[in-house]
Length: 115
Image 1 (cartoon, rainbow, N blue to C red):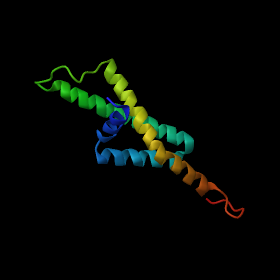
Image 2 (tube, rainbow, N blue to C red):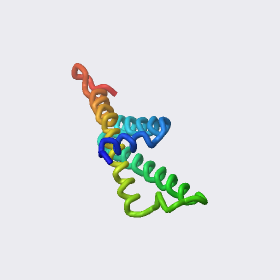
Image 3 (cartoon, one colour):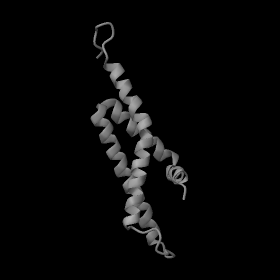
Image 4 (cartoon, one colour):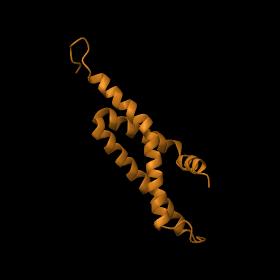
């Protein structure tokens, strides 16, 4: 499978509400917490991705007509790690501007610091 197509399909596998939540976490964590907050936000998002993927696979495995795929194996782990890296890379497009907004808000204006 084409890597670009795989990436697009992975991004589309989550619903709009989930993406809005991730965008909010990425922006807020970076805006309020700076660089450390940005990393913490991305770790939280990685945890959410892992929980959602494990939940999805365990639901599929509980179905009476389950045929062995998907399964919680090494390939699944690689897939989850791939999704985490891909989604967090996309969310950097929100985190980095949030960091810049934080710096701009903290920069002194005309020699007077803004509080």
